[in-house]
Length: 483
Image (cartoon, rainbow, N blue to C red; front, side, top):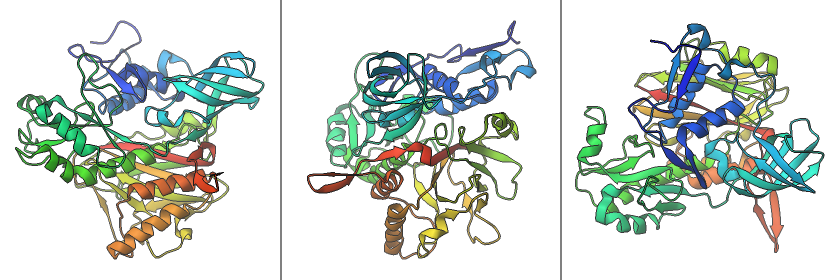
């Protein structure tokens, strides 16, 4: 039965709790933060909005957002039934005193928040000025003003600074019991992995965690769907913060925590590499005009997902692009799939395509010819790339595990030389001329270096600052569910 009028949106179902979760260096309601961020950025219909939030919140919390819509005509209406007539924004100036400004960062994506500290830059949407951040606490930042700006000025991201020592936070679950301290010591030996202890109270961890290391208990098994793939009681593996299982991460019953961590070390390094590269995601801020789509092989009209640079697309064309085709966001297991990347720019772009599989593995899908030059990564102006291309490629991409997967497409105006060289070295070590390569943390760091192209010399030593000029590159993602 529908509601009396309009649309009702709730953060959880009637029998569920709505959770606060850590975001970088602050806590907020999982649904509230995601909803707020989408309202700053998106102009899609209510149904698409809630579908996106439901998919993303699964990683943070077990709650399932609710939407009750009276009329089918309302499904594709924007939130509040208000048509937006301006570009999405990332922040707003709340006060100005001299050359100092306070900024509210309400539009930033949760996965890239850590890149918006000192030296990150936001520009006035009208081009009248900018704010260079000096500090940030939560979503409130202070910065130096350049040009003419005032309280209420809307800002868009221009530069982000990715920490050189970015870590992967692993929460230690209470199910580890008296082995928690042992787990902490074992994880501390893995470079850039941070073990975070549980705490009492409503907030389980005193800091942001990307994954949770825990032992499968009878209680956890009862919360999972009946399936032969549910790990046995007593096994150790990885959960998402929303207690979703990370496929292929659990071992045998009775495995010691030190043995489990040794077994999981390659997966943890892959997840760290994923975290590093996802800090570049900027579909909302890039000025490059590029779009990607994912579909089952041979069925290009049946979209699994699509993404495009919002600011690279003209305002009048944006809703047409968003609503031109319905997407399922689901892919049956063992199904071959393809990607199409379209360069709408009047200049060539250099590409890298990575697939993040449901079990946490990351592979480089493109490039995949390891003895070729960097020119093989170039996508000419106004052209499209289909991969795998049945007319020239002799491989397929096939789903092999159920769960949430993601594809990342990174486009740059400059060749990705350092990352390509690192990947070619890996391919040589594996003795392959063509095929998929699992990138290392070092390869992802080199990718950041390619994208930043921003060197600094101190005391005679030249280092990369990992300062990404996000208007000059694009990193887009499509999230999909393998069923």
